[in-house]
Image (tube, rainbow, N blue to C red; front, side, top):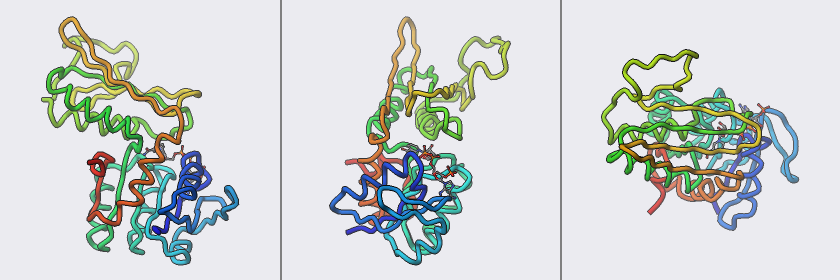
Amino acid sequence: MIKVLVNGAQGRMGRTVLDAVKNDSELELVGAVDIFSGEVDGVKVETDLSAALDKYKPDVMVDFTRPNAVFQNVMTALEKKVSPVVGTTGLDDVAKEKIRDATEKFQTPAFIAPNFAIGAVLMMLLAKQAAKYMPDVEIIELHHDKKLDAPSGTAELTAKMISEVRNAHKQGHPDEVERLANVRGADYEGIHIHSVRLPGYVAHQEVIFGGLGQTLTIRHDSTGRDSFMPGVLLACKKVRTLSGLTIGLDKLMD
Ligand code: NAP
């Protein structure tokens, strides 16, 4: 049995993970932590991550907290040789490099996925393939209005993956003028990213390619948080077999 502690246990994702871990025969839920103490589904939620890691000695810490907390949480886990499985978005490249160094220093593997939904991973892989042939592309990501960071980690990773096969270039008319600031969205090496935040959404993304007389749209919709659970559970089971820092669910797929 792989022992799992869930951090951010009272959040939207944390509660869903808690339930999924409890119902998995290969995983044992040993502890739950959040910024406020409480109880979720009969599980006591504690507030001191470091103390809970010492007390329950999990193999894995799943983190679905906040962009401003995740880096310190991951470092605390690695120092105690607990493998982080991270869903919290907002870690920048500098933070990821520091985490990579810490995995080596403490000889403890870590896993980060900006999106744990298999369909979203396929969307990114298909978008990367399409961009070779249709290099003019824009990304629209749509999320619930409680999301703290923008763009989404998925949109950023999609743009990065597309940039690996596409030469950076300016899109749209060379003389275009924004009459409202940022109306054309953020610019990642010429790829425009647009972030929509509205009640009613969970997590959605469209990657739109434009060519002569045609467009191609690749769209993924997470309509419920359970879409992320098979990926989270897989990462909990595999993370201890990895080495260093692994980023992206595609790395765990055949
Ligand atoms: P949420 O409902 O706000 O949950 C976050 C929980 O963590 C809250 O209970 C929060 O408490 C708590 N928290 C904040 N700081 C903490 C700390 N230092 N230690 C322990 N707990 C802390 O957010 P969510 O919708 O579940 O999303 C969580 C994160 O997961 C976001 O970054 C989101 O973008 C990401 N996400 C990733 C995926 C993926 O597939 N990778 C999928 C969905 C969401 P307070 O509310 O009191 O601050």
